[in-house]
Image (cartoon, rainbow, N blue to C red; front, side, top):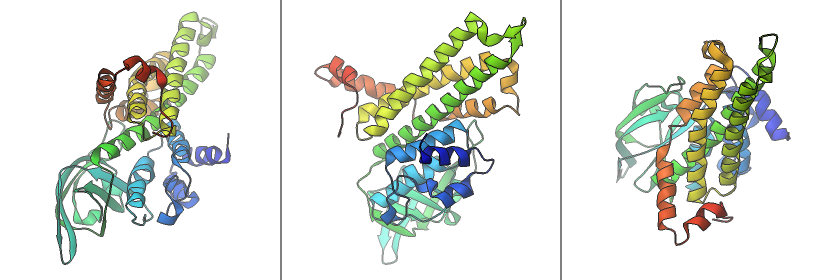
Length: 322
């Protein structure tokens, strides 16, 4: 385990990890230093996101660095400290002598109520908006994490710049970030299940010695491992839309199977309020849907159908440098 992984694991195991994440610079891992981030690349950011998923940490990590921070840096805007969240949708941008104003409605924006700034993508611009000027209606996903509706009505932006990233690319980035978090949570579900199967006794021996339970654990481990391989490949080639689609489709599919098996192994204990498995699987069920689930399988099918050699597309894997 490298230093970055050790540090992320230690911080994210705390009850309230966000202050330490900011202090250590991990909230903006993968964002260029010249823009106000901590440097590193997407692989470094993935290490931290994976640890957040493993510990079922309720923190706006993907939103602040992997999405909003990268958007701002890519547009040449400085990345401010604090919680950030990115959103895109149908927005109207109007420029006058005083700058830009925005109008638009955005649904289920992660952590909008907690953000220091909202980072809005639309009309070829990245804009920085003070959330105090927006109308925010609070909501939540199944895991209880904030997913808020945001309305901008003639809101003056703090800063704006042209941006080459479009809504589809932001969605891909969000899907990959969630896929990384899913693999971390699946690994935790596996670790918890293996440990419990070794501790819980039935008929005078640990349930992990029963063949049926061993088969369930083997299936759980297989699902988690295959998803992790696909996601790590996509992190290495984030510009390859097929790799990202395969990573998110596979992670979302595996998440349901992993959660079901983990609860089968744990029995009623795993659904209690106090048990960590409940926190983990609530996030598996929530994150599998966010930034799309079956839509990525549809994209893979369309790409295969359009390819001159569908088997080569499927079997070749991610294309380096794509």
